[in-house]
Image (cartoon, rainbow, N blue to C red; front, side, top):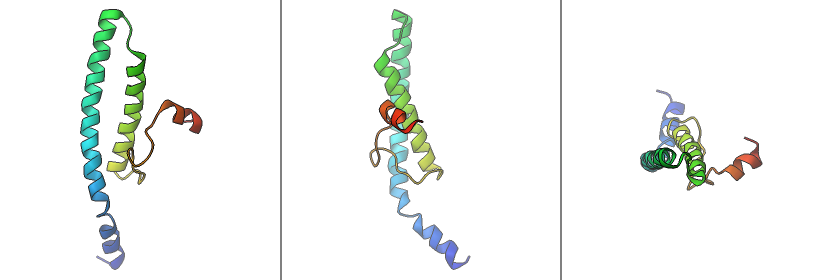
Length: 97
């Protein structure tokens, strides 16, 4: 193992606490998705339509989970919320994504 490989491995250690935090946030987000899913299903079953606010929350939470997974799998070095802004519809429209 050369010196460059050792430096690369050591430089990743500060990322570990963030990875632990984001893994916990991923599990919490997953639970919230299940809650939204059940509420939307019951609303659709009883009233024929879902809740618009829950639809928006679900969409934004899906984007957030995507950011979490990208960070946890080293696809991205950008830290998700709470270290950056929450992915909302206004931000998506401003950035043209």
